Length: 384
Image (cartoon, rainbow, N blue to C red; front, side, top):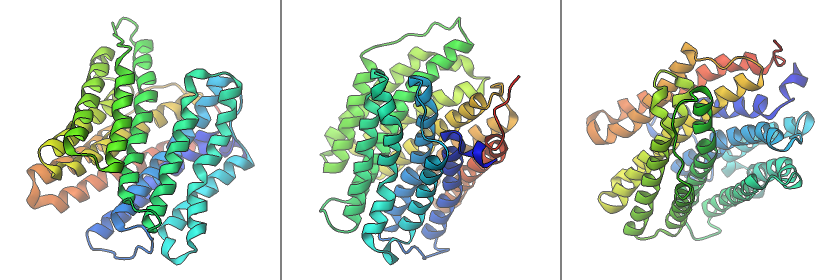
């Protein structure tokens, strides 16, 4: 069983990301609702929450995806066995160090948490470059920048640089969104076309570069706290470019196919997040937190659960079919995002109730994912 578990990146990092989702968010809800005040981190509570959602949940899932996809792209293996196990252990130590950061030597916390991404990059970067896989040269570069944002968030929290750590963490979230935009933009339309070959999709070559430039520009705007009209402009451009991409893919034809539809919903949530960000920047800045939850809970939550489910089923040799439990998972993650976003707008008097409802839906989505797929990642690949 041990040799099977550490035979592929998805078997380790997908469950770890889901475990992080199940454990880390409920504790944040306990802190924000006053049920607990114990958080011995040198990150402020809000920053700890943001940091852990990105580097405790989404980053391990990204690593698991790349460790699984790069061998298919390059024909070269990604880390497995002891190196993969040690990387998984490093993720666990990182979560403990960040949580107990104020009680540990600061340099230990920084080194352990920040080192995961560079070491993961070392596991896939050489394969991408040696294979001449030019289409994916940008991935190691993006991950290095993301690791840099993680480092700067620590240095900011420690008061070693003068910028707000939250700025680097929101920029990190936008980096996750950028990866979703690229990878999701490859798999969502291609999977749809493979299953529904008669669909007439349209591709607009200029739209992807425009969306990438707008997202990168938003990172700069967030870090350097640009004027609202500039941030709003790039957010509008990003939203429009993503909506154009979605329209060209024709994803609505899969309305009865949750495994297909969830990938398009994930991209749609990015557009919604950017529209909320534009409104916050240009009209009412109270809406900015809603945009962050649309991008994290809605976009990243939907896309990670959709991609992980397809990847585990496909790479374990099992047929990719819609199942009731998968449909339930996808509905729950959308309900989590909707609850978190509409409460501050429409149901202010019931804010905490909707906060708890959102958290329950989030936890149930990832818990059901673990229940469905832990037995699969512990079994050998099926051969029919």
